[in-house]
Image (cartoon, rainbow, N blue to C red; front, top):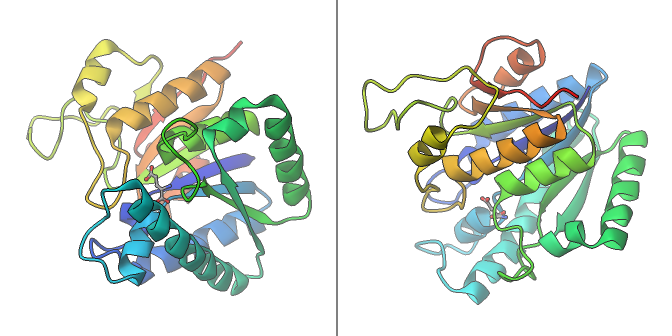
Length: 256
Ligand code: GLU
């Protein structure tokens, strides 16, 4: 299978912006094992700004564009250093690809991206993709990595996009506020109620939330790609997702 895995800032870092060593080590181990089993994996990883905040010892995520871009420049280095080191322990080679929305919209640039990505997979490398935050302004940005991961999954014709996050799926209401909220295991159509319930989102260090995940799901479903939202608390949930076990929420791609 060709799988795109998206991991958010809240999985990779503590609220301080410092690396969550246990989570990241487990994640790299599971992804390495999945690759060893013969699957192709493309990792879409956030965390540049969050890790930049930690590395620069800032008290909070910068709110201005230059501050965010500077934090991302520092954090992206740290992020790739960590991935390089941890995947190396399992004999896997990482490759960094930084994209803007413009790169995916422009036909020639998109084609270059697709060709390079295909070659990296043939070479057995593990592409690690993030938005190119240092040069992405509002006009050209994708804006959030849930959407970016869906655009990538669709572009590379992935069989499945797995979004690892701090909640274990899509609920009928916000489970942090409503004790009656129920997990929705399978979604074949995104309803207005789901969109209304998604609300805003993100944390102090990151961008996404349920709304951007539903946007991502819509893009995937339309293109015939399945997408799952699963909890990142236990990275081995990736094995369950690949084995078709009932974990998180599975959005079923349109079958033509
Ligand atoms: N590209 C941002 C980063 O690496 C994250 C965007 C997002 O969390 O959706 O910090």
